Length: 463
Image (cartoon, rainbow, N blue to C red; front, side, top):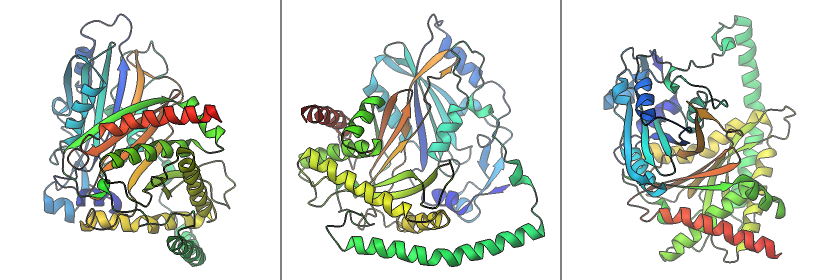
């Protein structure tokens, strides 16, 4: 058996009928030219063939009952996975459009996973207009996070449109970290322990200074740095039910980057502007727009001040969405100022402190989820907005071209909306996941995002 980490086990602990803790990925393909009528049926049959499954696809909970998974969270290898159950074939009434696909994915994403089986499902969906089909895959967050899941699915794709007889994702062997498998020596362990103690001592003053800065920002309305709990209670921060809605939008990446350059901002700034503008309009129509700006919790790639390497560092920041600002350009300026302050705050920290800082920053959010206080008190931030870089070149599966990839995220009490963007082959794909009951007509947000983009384009052209 393999014990779950405390963080992975936490996703099992907060699982409920109202808050299923799985994440998903929606891939849309165009059928290859000259594909036979049985193309999808044959593909499903190959996916259900007798394969040796690889981790984590063959992981089952060792103790799937409520008490067992709370007190003894562990995986066991399942040697007898019923692929006929996990791999499913669905169809839209032809010709199925984006709306019909969104309705089906919303329904599929609302259904909790069966804890007595490996915690994943894959649905092949035919009937999309313009000779297309979709693949929707979901996995429990205790098994994998959304980004790793996307990469796991991506590894089976090819840049060769002529390649056939390709294996399904659940047969791909994970890349092993051989250095992690070696038993460390006593001397190495002692050295690491000493380094950890020195790191703890040196980090204390940096962490104290960083959180003092956040406290100072929280008490000053003119400070551009956004602190936790600054966002207001709003319609998107209530309790949620188990039913989900899912919507998508796709935009040209070069257009968004052109706009970012025109305002001396970043691609993330434009994404936040589009989301904030759509949310402002959505809440204003419901007469529920707060007087103070909504805030976004944003996973970001940043480089600490003392990092001279070429890799990336992943942290988390909170920024204003400027939803209280009526003028579009002033709203964008406020967002840019807020994200710059947040990035500067993070980059002022040494790399050795950044992970600890991020864990402390996110601890109130995790506590709200575990304690059940989400949606019953002021939110740590109002909405999660992510922007994830994906493959830059077109990819194929069995000769079928991947046209778009959309993340399908989880939501929890106190956060009835998640917006995640994923770049792919020159486009930026927005996935909106929301609570069906808490956010009725959530699809309007996707429409309003597109109209916000058109408005910004016209404003920049007029400058």
